[in-house]
Length: 270
Image (cartoon, rainbow, N blue to C red; front, side, top):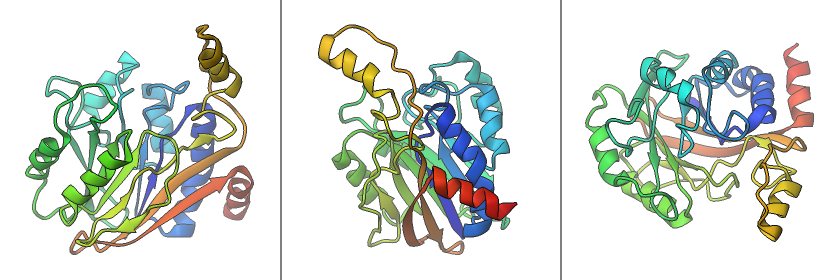
């Protein structure tokens, strides 16, 4: 089975390209499941219930979040009530949201999805390794496929988590830095790994934000509004092929769809 993991969706440009390409891409790539990180979906920070609904309607099956998960209080009810969105599992038990989602792919297979937050250069948080061990014990034995979104800053942190979970989950794919890495691989025990999926949004930017606004802030120390940029919109992600019987990854492939390719996809889909 083939699973698409979409990197951080940033603002309206990111939402728009997802809305346009996910359904035709599912058809073209024979995708059984689509997972997306949506913590930057609304004006570059946070997620609203309306945006959540838009992403699900666009063809996304499961949503992971990150350190901006609680920027918008209105998302709390969605985190508590919906079965296909997860909080970072190493957040406190009292934090709104679920530690793991078990969703059904279009081939009938059940897939577990987990999110974890890294600790290097990030705000203090509970141990992600202990949290992963704890959550893996909660997943039913007959659910063989498990996908992990590791939302982390340092590549060393990401690589360690990949090795720690190698052979115990189907994939460990990083988010948060908004920069696609070229280290996709299947680790020795059968876990697909990549340090960062990259950003789904405007690439003529500083990590999705207007260059002039960020430049002014860092060169003058005057506070500015980091508005979401608009140019060179791309959808970045990775497709992992998994053996549904064993949960082991068979292959991993980066994918990036720019605006021209998105328009072609839409035309071909009619």
